[in-house]
Length: 261
Image (cartoon, rainbow, N blue to C red; front, side, top):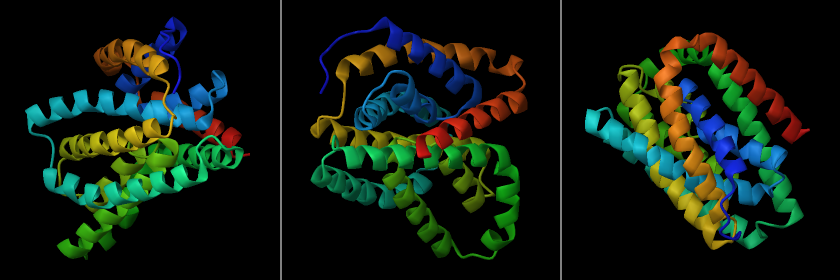
C-alpha cells in the first residue's frame, strides 16, 4: 500500500475524469485506470485496486440518489450479485495465489483492461443496434432463463471488474438493456450503479488486502472527481451527446488497443 501522500496533480486528473463521467455517464474505471497506468506509470494492479475503491465511493453517491428516486430494481441487483460476488471472490483468490505485483500478473491485468476498454467502446457506439439485434430472442425467453442469464452476466462482470476495474458501466448497461427491454431505462441505470457498489467495494477490499491500493492516490482522486462529476452533470445538457460519446468511444478503443498490443 502506498504512503499517505496527497498530490494535487492526481486531483486534477480526478476533476477531468469526473467531468467526463458527469457528461457521458461512462464509468470512471474506463477512464481513470488507463490514465493511471499510461500517464502516471502506476503498476496495473495498484491502478486497478485504487480505482475500485474510488469507484465504490462515487457509485455509492449515485446509488443513494437513485434509491431515493425509486429508480433501482433490487430484483435485478440481487440476480447480478448472485453471479458477481462468487466470481469476484474466485478471481481475487486467483490473483492472491499468483501474486498481484508479479510481471505475469501485471500483463494479464493490462491485456484484460485493454480488451475491456475496446468492448466498452463497441458497446457505446453500437448499443442501439446490439439491443435491437437480440430483441426477438429475449422476447421468447422465460423469466427463469432471463434470471439465469442475469446471474451469468454478474459472473462475467465480477471477473472483468476484479481484473481491470472496467465493465460495470457501459458493458453492464448494454446487457441489461438487452435482458430487460420492458424496464424503464432509468431503473436499469440505477440498478447497474447499485450493483456496482458491492462489486467494486468487495473487489477493492480484496486488492487492499493484497497491498494493491494507494490510499494517498485514492484520496487525491476523490477530492477532484466529486466536484468534477457535479460540474459535468450540470453542463451535460449543453454538450451534443452523440458527438461526445463518439469521441470518447474512439479514445477508449485507441487506448485499449495500445494496452493490448
